[in-house]
Image (cartoon, rainbow, N blue to C red):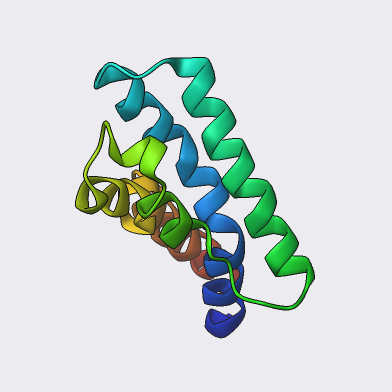
Length: 107
């Protein structure tokens, strides 16, 4: 298993997947859905450009410091919503179960 590759891909692409939870929390906090969608989209596009230019993904930091978003959610909450552990559900358990099942077939 290429754990370094998995970690690299998660760092690059994971923040984009986590934005949905941030959007839902913003709307729940009273923000306009379309306005927040546009603010997140704008930051995501800038982050994608940074990645294309060879930099790391700045999306988490950009969202945490975006004054449009932080009017509704504090930085700590945005950061928690963007944490990869908050977005995997039961995937680690299912992956381990699948790996066990596959290894028992090989033996």
